[in-house]
Image (cartoon, rainbow over all chains, first blue to last red; front, side, top):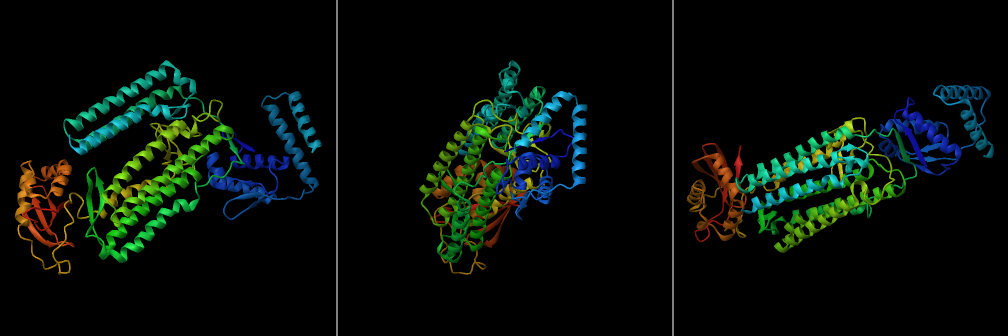
Length: 127
Length: 460
């Protein structure tokens, strides 16, 4: 499982770690019981401060994805699927719309974007 | 040529030969510490940079060799050689900068990369420390059964520096070697756990792991070699043991170095093309002169060297200064072990006539003052009076003559010689005052009219 970080992105590195790991967790690339690299190891490999990785792990632990040990290690844990409340669903829709607008603004054509969204939707239906 | 001059000459040739091939050992996409497209290495401009580098390198080597062989200035020659290699590298680094490739902005990390461990487990690394502690626990209570002085340094012809045996001296000796072992263990752990992985996955990552494992094995082997001299000294092993140790050490280091060179920096030669990211995941602008890495925002303690094989510290990380200070401490404290015998100690197993006699009231042994005065005067004339020395002392004086002469020449003429009393083993201690400084001399009783034991150290 490869985690990719864009060093030039405007998105903070800690947010990229959270997003990247969450995608892997949702897709099942990381299964319950799988260990994650220790905070120090991941920070060294990315080249960021330990706190950046620790903050990302803490956020995922708050969401219920990870169990963090006292020695800085992290393990994927079994997580019951939560039911999204209505206001949350609205928030997500707004975020998706914002993201689509951002991608269009960066030059992607609506047709290519629609094609990509259909591919993602199909993947979700197959789950 | 005498022994130190030959040793320095060999060092100069070895360093220059190493420097000659250094650019070949690095990762293919690093050229004189600059991240480049590997194809650049085959360009005319790159060949010109390499040629100029080697011309500068060998020019400084020839100058250093001349200084050493003709003018007998070994220390200055070594310094000149090191500075020459450094300047050649920095100049080549600057020339290579115009070919710098743009840095990859995407960082990839393998979340399922295997965790790496010390070969043989942590106990393998700690065992030498345990042995040293055990040796200390045995030696200190048995200090009265040990010889009056123990060898702590060996030359081509056997021991050439001693320490005067005492519980404190034994503890200091073992503590120094334990400290070196700790530094080596910390280095091994830093290579495994505090350095960055560069290749993400596939054969390149496997080669990198193999390279790290070999390096850690070399460090641990060095740790085992480190503890042998004090063991030989305290257990009074025959002189042959240290000769075998020296040969084994050289063979082992050469074997490991060849193995690492064949693997290439970071195992780059173990895999073909199509490897991971370009460069070594550090920014060119963070490298000073291509060989000093300074990046306060990088948590890594060690990073791969950009010139040559192995790792270097990240000087921007305050914790990286710990090993640097540790090495400095070792260098500074090492002479403490041979205090009183730092510059010259030689002779047979001389024993005081009456070890139980109170030393404080002992007067000077007959003839030592005159013998010492004659010896110093003979040095001032440039011809040591070997006829008044035992064969072993004469051999030691011959070996260390350049150092002794340098000291005497620096201090000027002898103005006075004062008896201070006996040292802890009953040798007479004299303070020799010169026009430009003082020396403390220890001289044992004359045996058949000859000096068998004599040593000195400079006084502030």
